[in-house]
Image (cartoon, rainbow, N blue to C red; front, side, top):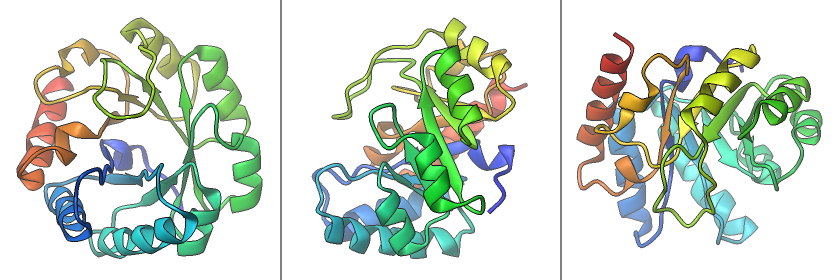
Amino acid sequence: MRLNREDLKMYLVTDSTGLSEDEFLSKVEGALKGGVTFLQIREKERSCSEYIELASKVHEIAKKYGVPLVVDDRVDVAMAIDAEGVHVGKSDMPVSIARRLLGNGKIVGATAKTVPDALAAERDGADYLGVGAIYPTTTKVKTVLTSTEALDDICKAVKIPANAIGGLNKDNLDVLKGIPIAGICVVSAIMKSDDTETAARDLIHAIDNLKL
């Protein structure tokens, strides 16, 4: 599918930690109702078959709202459920191989923390970048902080859209003002909310204010 810059405005990375499947799917659907525009499922601890089963259910919900779903890291899972694409990190499958396996009709996202990394990802076929972490995060994923200056440099160095990620919430986006990001990626700001629909709406409002 073709990725539009606007698709990346409100990007949710899922986290099912401590949730039943029904609770998790309910939170994801609430976020989509609230206006999430792009979805990434991230399951580091599940077996391949478990990952496929859950990702397939998330994909069905995402399709109801017309929102693209990418699978974190696992190209095999993305292919199994015919997801819109995959997102690969620095230690995951190389962007060039993910692109070759998925073809040009799917989305390939990549993580970048430096301008050289960003340029390499773009050259190898990435459609968009996730750049961060801007703030320390509470997820289990290891994070290295990225300065807003580095984020700005990356956005200006590449032609593909870039999103800020890492510890972002509706109250701390001011540091991103003036940086030409496509949008923001969040995990906890939505997934740890009791009302994911409202949390997503509040974040979109904060993003809109940021770009005024």
